[in-house]
Image (tube, rainbow, N blue to C red; front, top):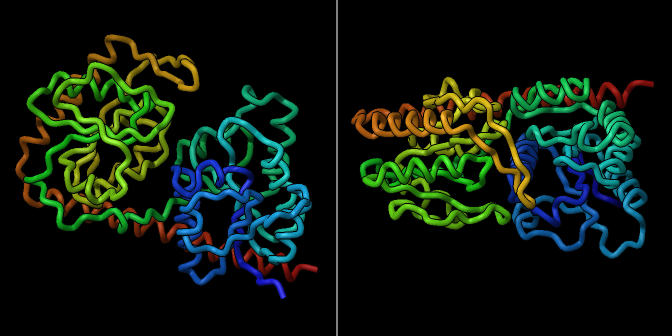
Length: 381
């Protein structure tokens, strides 16, 4: 007899590429982990056979093709039917709509009682990018699901683009895994930026470091296609992805997020706050959702345009705006480093912990609603 599940997360080609380690996959992993803690049985259905180790490490049952010659649609239909999935979860792809994306939505709509589609960021496919016919075809399927969106900015953009309502979902953030309670603020060396990429404001960060030679800066590079900057100032170190994020936060004095992109509620900000580290960030995208967590905001530039250079989208900031922003960051960094409030780290940690509790409560309430709706649908003649 086949094992059945309350929830099945349906892959449409991403796991073999990104495992469970990209930002989107981390969100899905944390949501699934939280549902599992609520007592729901959870599995992952993936057609891919060469999977990233992080999927296995997450500890979910994995429903794989295992050499089956069936095409994706038939395989997925058989798999979900055998699993008797009450709730299926898929996610919106980034920019492009593949055949697997459409098939996954179609099959889930045909079989599952409750269908959820996760909107994680503003990179979902737009009409101008995919064309009218494909846009209408795909989003007609998505409209039959409940879209749950992380981040107010992404939800508003999605609703304006598609006309589909996206209900609120907050990432449960497993920040405890990144918490270094032994961090000593007076020992930490660096003003840090995580996730080096032009869209993240890396050029601004390098210029800030260049103008503050007396301060040590640390830049974490983990985007493979982002060009490595040349002629870095001697007080700026480049470092690859930290296997142990706690080590990074032990060394970080301040966190900078000079992003020029419509960010979601970035986990790196909350991880820093949970470690008692002061973030100084652009007021952009959904980052203002941390307003009550002690974050220091700087207004992003006006008039930024974007140019495609190879596989990388590069922002071009007007010179006057760049000067304003670099100056504002430098002044704020100096003022923050000069503060000697011994209670500040504890205050930031407490505010972050409260935000995480609220996030998990929102997910728990949503889970109760999903189960109630599922039961009601299953008993409807």
